[in-house]
Image (cartoon, rainbow, N blue to C red; front, side, top):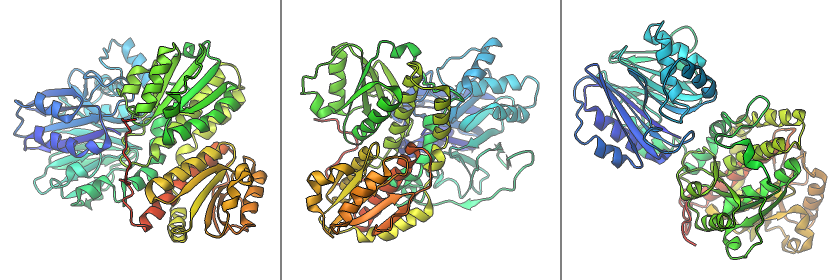
Length: 602
């Protein structure tokens, strides 16, 4: 997620912006920039890499005295991390910063190019400033801004300043956060979170979706519809760490909860009415592909394993999945016609990177699924699909896993359509279900509270079995891994049908079994396996939309008609279960012992 900071006032604006962006580094970024409007002149600076590079560029710049300023840290989605793609974007006399994704930017851009507008970047964001200046030709500034916002489809937090109205910052918010702050000096502040505002503002307004308006030194006006809203001010927190966590106990908890909004970013611009479209991935890329090999480690391996069911079932293509640390020493037989996919949250995973290099050397087409643009894996791969999860501070992956699953699901549909393996009706139904994902991922507070209460029963014993069938087998592997990582309790994931082939020997009252029992995927078979464990006194926690009377604990999921929606909801429940058990054990959930976020060594 990008970071936004804005300021109206007399202080040194460069310092306000740089300090504010520094407080947003935890969100992740690959480039940064700022613009200052003072004395009817706008000065801007951009840099790639860390904020210190932007600080060096602005070392001799001074901006004391009344003026406006906007700043931005960018996490690349459209276009590489370059100065041209960094924010702010500008027209002839206006500048904008934008967090989010403009879904209809290509249509807007095409129309603006026909009107002789010149685009400098590859981003979706640049259309906003040019569209504003086009609307400004026949409207006063606020009406031009209003018309611009009404044209945009997608997610956005936007700050805009223009020489046409040099005392105001225009703002708009939809589906991504934006906060306005004020103090007794009549200074106005903007931020993507509380942290840049702490110590500067006393009171804040947390903007709602579809809010837009303008701010000046002694006046803030907010619309949501045709009429101005009354301003609802809140006292600002004084703890920066608490503000970064948005009130959650741990970053992992925050990241579980934000999966709903993050999934919008992953899907945005890719899920169309009757098609799946990936940026920078031409239709011809799949030509001559008759097999897929996927390499990954840890959580990413579980996402890969899940996708193997989807590719073979939907795309009708042969798939093999390998743990990267094993693949690099196997001397695998690699043949032309194989698409080699690597999956990594950081893009720096050493084993996965080496596997990718082996595939490149063998002449295979390569595709990376990654969260970090300009990472080593992204630079080496032929093509990349970014997951757009934003920075993940918790070592145990949550939203990175979920966004990988979504990208792989979309990719299986894209490949199936490209090869003519699915009907139009099938694709439209899949798209309908993809669009339900943000709602499915929204945490149910009642379920979370139930998990919090029942977690006290699962702090002892000699271990956990997580069991499931089909795509719910790799989800069981992921659930077991989450619990191991942060609670330090022994847990194993198994296919449900494998219980009778050895593991059931461990079954007794001190063995906890977490059973994934979706209604759409082999329910009766899984039920039979769970009954076998229950008959041997294993303690059963069943997760299912169907009531299961013999379970010791039962978490009821919603009644979805698609297995992937069941998968995603159960994934959230498993994450919450691990979180709450770990918290009860007194562990540092975000920084589990012996683990690192990015495994850059063998």
